[in-house]
Amino acid sequence: MNFIVVSSVLVAICSVLVAILMRKIKNWIPQDLDKFFQSVDRLSSKKLFKVKFLYKDMYFVNDPNLIHKVLTSDECLEKPQMIYKFFGLSDGFLCCKFNQWKRDRKNFSCSFNNVMVNAFTSIFCEIADRMVEKIKEVGCGQKDIIYFTERCTISMILASSFNIFPNDVENNEERINEVATAVKIQSTLLCERFRKFHLFFDALFRHTNHYRKITNLKNYLLEILFKEVDRKNRRIEANNEKVPNFVGNIFFNKLLFHKNEMTLNQFKDSITTVIGAGFETTGTASAHCILFLAMHPEIQEKAYQEILSIYPSNDDEITLESLTKLEYIERVMKESLRLGPTVHSIAREAMRDFELIPNKIAKKGSIFCINIYGLHRRKDLWGDDAELFNPDRFLPENFEDKQKYFLPFSVGRRNCIGYRYAYTSFKIMMIKLLRNFKFTTNLKLNEIKFNRQIALKLTGEHLVMIEQRN
Ligand code: HEM
Image (cartoon, rainbow, N blue to C red; front, side):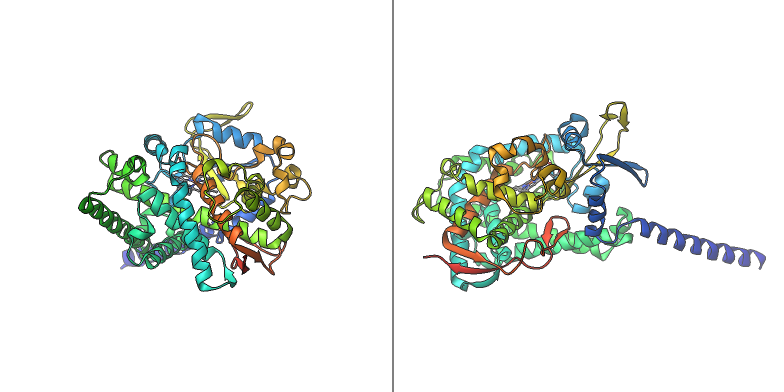
């Protein structure tokens, strides 16, 4: 009898203690990702500050020289799994551990190099033309431009990285919508994981509905892709079609070539990584840029005039070489990526003890957090007008001493593998959109709000008024 009473009391006390502890831990964990990043911004005047997160030293690095030291150091090529696990792609080469990353980066870099981007240029143009036709078809007027830029980006990735062209796919528009919706729901679910404390711990997370939903979405996406790739291959075989040389280097074909070196999860996560990393970033960046231009008609006009001077006719061929002549558009895109860097924060982990500043050693396993969004808007680095949209700050004479403050694609060996690809597809979308339409908006730069989720989103829609040019 006594034993039963004592055990009941003990169980009750333990339950209360666990509840108090859970509540305490819950308070330590930020409930809203964006609010968390806002508090990081407030500390950005400090060159460097350290906090203890669970058992790890976490350094918030704000000094541009130290940021470069971390990102270009061979000691900091590891990604902290504690943070990157929230991307839900732990086995893909954006988030994976160093040894896998080293192998994968070597295997796949040829799929994103200049030769490949050159080969993709006409594909990008064809798909951007389809976007223009789609806008004309649904009619001008007030639209959320991201709807079109995101779908255009997915089509570009499917064509260039998976060799699946719009004409290869039955009900192409429907398929693209399915892919876009699956990726977007997945990214919302991943953000929710951050907000829900009980989803933090992998051991618990794997037994939740949330995990099952994310896994099902991933499998659904892969199923669509495999079906389309298979359909295309069967058609090529049946018709004995000739395949261009560069197709062997297309990302998906390289992946199949190296499949035996990989686990099934690494194979699957590598596919989802390229779709996720390429789609949400470039699609959102192009929508931000159009919105900024709609807010600044004189800058838009100057960009339009530059396009006319290089491509007087809508049918003029766009090549990598002619793209380099669009210097003003390039400054517009850079300024847009400065104010709206779609990858707003990144992190690294020390693989060995690392001397961050003289006589200050960061221990092996320390995490370094880099707030790209904050860095791009600092008045002490960019001047009092840092919050304004001014492409001329990227004129060579103005930008020369500011290169270290601009990191939309990161730097060092673990920078964006797709940055040439992204710049080219982004520029082509801008040419096609600005050549065919004029954009205006009632939104004001100082009134819009960005929301830092997995990618940098706008709170609300990219609402622009679209008017067709002659
Ligand atoms: C405007 C568009 C883009 C931006 C702003 C962007 C930015 C970035 C940044 C900052 C990183 C480093 C991430 C980190 O350190 O955690 C990164 C990595 C990566 N990006 Fe991009 N990216 C863009 C487009 C693309 C495209 C189009 C692709 C592929 C088609 C791509 C594929 C990747 C991959 C695979 C990585 C991981 C590289 C590695 O760890 O070796 N990105 N990107």
